[in-house]
Length: 373
Image (cartoon, rainbow, N blue to C red):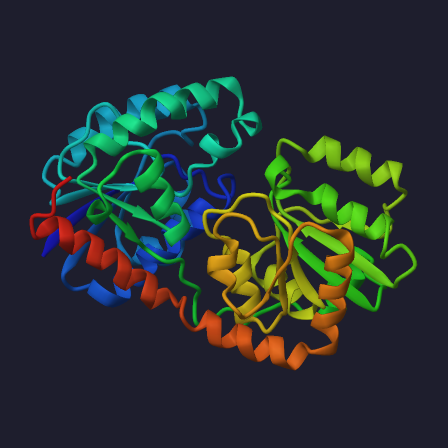
């Protein structure tokens, strides 16, 4: 049995968005694939086991004494507490995009995206300096690198001069039980005041690159006289106050509902009842809500940016950020819903939890069998 130590100290439950979900799902899939051959040791912030009890049952969770909310303290904890306890691991997996100054070898490094190179203006100066200094060093020290999409793989190879054989795609996986316990449409409509005939869903943190303003312009412009409401589900990000002002200035308070972070049951219910998932993001390393919507039978409309065309394939509509084109795409989703549902479910079947686990298992085995950087 091989011992894998996974650094999740960066993973503050409910606060880091899709990167948390991505790692948690692939580790759950790994347990299905190689549960008897691999001993998982997870090093996580306080409260992780409570937030993810299924992983706590399948792996040994070592929780830090703090929530690791302060980056310098977290980095120090990684280089001391984690490094000491991971000495006997066969592989140390750093899931947060960087490797701490001290780490046992060999290592697998997960890089979720390289957005800081594409949109540096969306990052604070402190975080931009940290990523600019630590990520290239981490890439050089990594034995192997895992990424969520071919788009990110190409970007890592080209922008960070990494040999192609040293980067593997570990796809995002969705649970086979998704939607099983979803909240009913009637309950969600009552709770959030959803009265429109058509509901559009956008589950995303309100960061600048998520482009919520585009959807506000859509509702205030070509959809202004249509019976449509937009539900934005996700925690408040760096562009949240700007979004609130945009909603107020266009008098969209009754048509754009900001409902915060939803439980899985509410998320599934919202997606299932929606005329479409609308996803105008300017940058995604993957875009998990796209596959979740497809698995739940919801037509998908996305921008043509970054990894989204790759993830969507021909199972959804990939549209340039043109308002009239998005109106047409929404009408198309309604008129041809059955076709988009069929295509989406077929596409989602390529991103199962067990597939993500197999990809991660292959990355670990590559290292264990002597793959080097």
